[in-house]
Amino acid sequence: MHLRDFTPPATPASQAALELASAYYSPALLNHGVRSWLWAEAFAQVEGRTGFDHELLYVSAVLHDLGITPQFDNVSLSYEEAGGHAAVALTAGAGWPAERRQRALDVIIRHNWPSVDPTMDEEGYLLEIATGLDISGARPDVLPAEFVQEVLAAHPRLTLGPEFTACVTDQAARKPQTAAHRLVQGGLADKLSRHPHEA
Image (cartoon, rainbow, N blue to C red; front, side):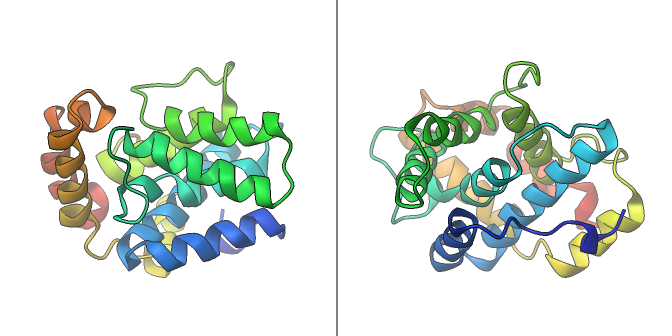
């Protein structure tokens, strides 16, 4: 398994998602979004999953944290739901039908669930375990170590730990009914500070 084995879908929606993310994310958050897609695709390969929607997964992974940026922060919605609605708007512009646009919203919302049943939502499951690795350090030994190091060299973590902690802590304080509060209460700051990829 090598980084060169994974190529973003060459579609208008995928290209627009990366352009949008590049415009509004910090460098650390942009790298997090790209790594999340790479981890998701790699987990799929390790687990032998082949029937999922690669474009949907890419768009959802790249945009899944857009709701914590100041420009897309929502006064009452959780950051994952706000980001999901941004993905709906983007994919509408790319010509996706309504049902597929809804899938982008579902996948982005479900990435913050404690777990996702892959038989219900395979893309949601892959994004949930991918972000679980990148944020909480879950399943750190499943993917090949050389591939992990290759990805981290190409898309370094930079200031992700303190930046993501600050953003989600702010969300939790303002929206205590959302998943952000659960993440903070579950030790988000400590998990990021002790993340195995920070070594």
